[in-house]
Image (cartoon, rainbow, N blue to C red):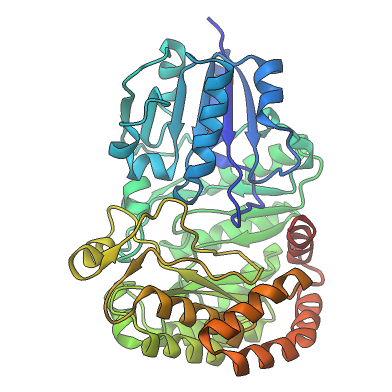
Length: 468
């Protein structure tokens, strides 16, 4: 019997996505092929989506699925409460990163009927077809599967799909590297599983046929360049087949970047390179276990800057062995690298990571639910740390974070930011750094506008500014 399935990606404050939810689009494809009617509400990517109650009344779903992120659990709970207020005995399915990492905690929540742990695309149809309200949630353990025949996502089920401008492309899953703070191995496994690059290009051509607003492709693999030759083959094919969409590839490591790759990226329409530095202090950096060196990062940054591509680098404040004094090494390294933008993140100790185990032994953990790391944020905001230890208490982490953002101009000045900036300067005695940063803001604006010209980044940041 055909069922109406409503899938929801809640809006998370400070964590807007520019790409529609790939996982829900894949589930929509599987369900649609089995004869079920699917509607996807992506509040994170499409902020103009009407309130949930409107769809509960008009669509009248038989089953509701909610994608869970750890920072967005407060919002996700409100979504589920709204659903149950409308229909108290409707089965609710949950999945996503938080469901995979915290299934044991979710199992105590009577709002959910089914908890998907891992990759749900090969199990979703069976569960939907037999779904009923469960007072005690059932945990569905989904093992990692080969992805040679990965389902083509169906974004036509999304509310407002004709407005989609950035296409999320998956060419591989999994990551063999062992960074201490990363939980990808729990969600996608350490096994690196690849798709045929020809099939990936074909998927993009199909997407252009039904997504009239498409302007850009974002490759969102966990680790797209484990096989550098394969990524270069993808880039050559992307150019040869004239996809003609701006290209962004996330999660490339610095030690995977060489001049040929940069040239191929430029030829394919890429406008930037972003890689994780994480920390500038040798001891803290070594404890991460990235498998690359700080010299690799310096070399890669130099190559990217020489190429003219936009360079972004990511750092983390509050990792194991970190301290206020050691965080100053990160600020110095950031200035040395001279990237066009830096993302400063407050460390979140996710379950299943070595870094969390370190804090369980040496420090103190607070609830990570609702915590923000703030990758991608351009407003001035200092997050509340959720892990601390004697050498780096929470207040010193906040001071280090604020100083890093100010010293590297890693925010876009807005009038409504002034009270937060002044309050932070007074609280942590950062008057000099604050004054210098504010004086540099006109130049920072000019740098953003000139470097973003001819790229999709200008549009993205303009959208973020207008929606804030």
